[in-house]
Length: 307
Image 1 (cartoon, rainbow, N blue to C red):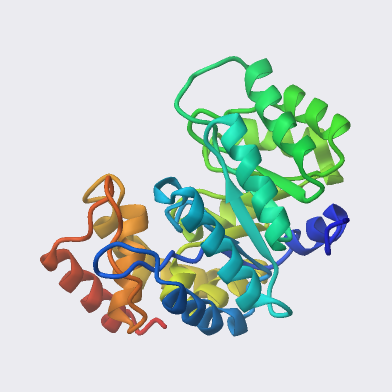
Image 2 (cartoon, rainbow, N blue to C red):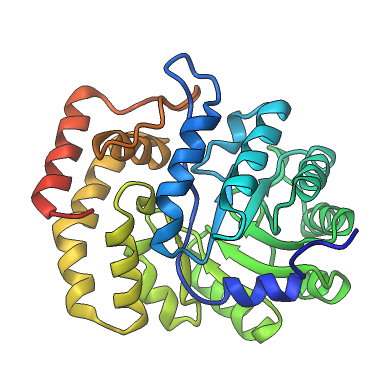
């Protein structure tokens, strides 16, 4: 049975607009909360993101067990049907990534965000083989995420694109400008290109100048209108609005985020709690913000007037 959205259709959608990774809702005891997650998606969908990534990095993919993963993707697909396309995260060991990608396809996801393989360092041929096996296991469009142990170089990425028509996108989480420019120039319009550094708004103007105008926003989870406003300012080269929001919110926000490793996810869940859309705690090995940091973030949100 063919996917309901072709890889090329998905590539066109991902080539413009703002993207985001919804957090995954947990109960106070740390169990998946499907009702809360559905409510979150219904709240976020009307703000106009081009696509949402279910069970992505900000969605704590790395902490989900298989039955929960299926429940997360099913809830996202059913809730957002007809509203916004859902791409599913898949990663870890190659065979696990394949199983999750195939499950996401079965459940009706529109595409796959291929997260890095698990732990092991390897050479470019090995990384390419991992990506190719996942691409060949599904008919959905696949976006590969260069981050951590996945550091595909232009030559191998070009070979993968040539041999896998459903490899439709490249997401950069490395911040290596030379590599990003080299990939963008070498592959041209063959792929769509997404900025994936946390916090993406800080890098957005620079990435647009490199030919990467699309990025995923984590703060969309708790200040969705501001996230959309910032994206529109980047698209319009409205530097006055960008600089105002960078100075009043994003740079102070980074000071809180940088207080501890792992806070790139924790601070997003904290923000959602502050604005009245509590998604529960993060799971170990992540840790929640300390009470004083929560107060600091709440004060920043109020003072900056973002929402």
